Length: 74
Image (cartoon, rainbow, N blue to C red; front, side, top):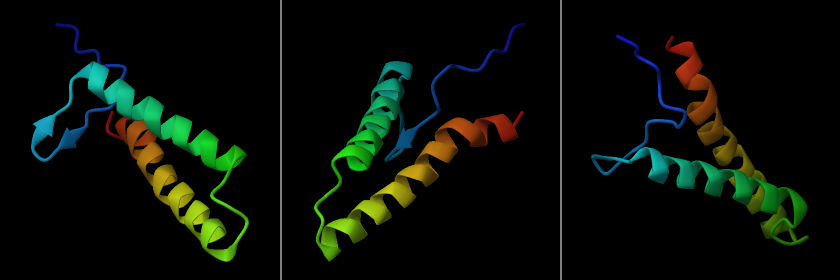
């Protein structure tokens, strides 16, 4: 039996497992938001800079779970 893992991460929201298409949509959304923050940010004031930093840190954690956590489980 071939037990290939899906290409997309396994994501559970409020007890509901997302389909592969839904997981792909969420993964792409995370990547697009990261790109947006890197290019446009959230303003040059202290609050905008702090929010950008915080969002990028959390999104980095999420990205690590989506891409690297699965590799560690093999």
